[in-house]
Length: 355
Ligand SMILES: Cc1ncc(C[n+]2csc(CCOP(=O)(O)OP(=O)(O)O)c2C)c(N)n1
Ligand SMILES: [Mg+2]
Image 1 (cartoon, rainbow, N blue to C red):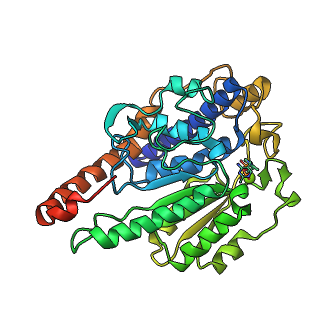
Image 2: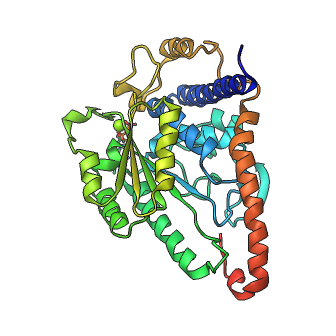
């Protein structure tokens, strides 16, 4: 007979899988409804982004502009449905462009249904100050990861300016999700070199190494050995051999958190359009809807109701909000308490803070 703890573990992993498949199918359905977009990479990287947000990110969905929040940058902006699904399931609240908290959801299910339509909160690529929770506009490959280096430098600068003994108020981490296309760009290599030089241990790039880009297999245009390359830049490099192995993903993220002398690159081997019987590992899954038949067959593979569209099964939102939401909320409250003590001791410095 199973012990209570073992039962909990099984229930937990079932809830994790349900949330992951919800991200996948929301992404597939949104791209299909828009009749354009990029389903394959959200389907492949859903477990990795889910694990990061659910178990590691220090981010309160109810306060997405807290100064010390961890930053998440989707450098592969074309995989935007991955981010919109997470923002929806975790219940991230909207703020307006002048950073007054508004309170409604940043992304509703109806917003997801209008993916890629004019004025949608879910444009083809994430746009800063248009959709709350998006930390920077991404789309041109390489730009997102380069901006993430700037964010990590900003953390270091603000920490050295504001922190005082007993008040480590600024110590956030920056995570960026990138792909083969990012790695090909010169700007990302220049930024990685600077990050290594500055020993930015608050910076983690997660590289979706699916060996597929828009035009086909990477063999056509790209044969860098990213691990050797980044070790040469002074980064810590680790590898996750299977994007679906949540334990391995968690260990890699833990390795990042335990590394205090250099930035970390996590190379993830994934299968674009994971689970699609005819389109997995092909470049057609990069930038086209799967098609109704392929979509149904994929949902069958996920043990999902094949005719359901935009389905968020009962309990999935609650599960995500109990993970990221609860941890993020507690961290936020602890930070605010600390900040109020700091304000009493250093009123002038406290007044200089900004979002
Ligand atoms: C600088 C730049 N060049 C070209 C493009 C057009 N583009 C969008 S996605 C993509 C391929 C990206 O490949 P990868 O990062 O491997 O993404 P995946 O196909 O694995 O989702 C290209 C060339 C772009 N967005 N930015
Ligand atoms: Mg790729």
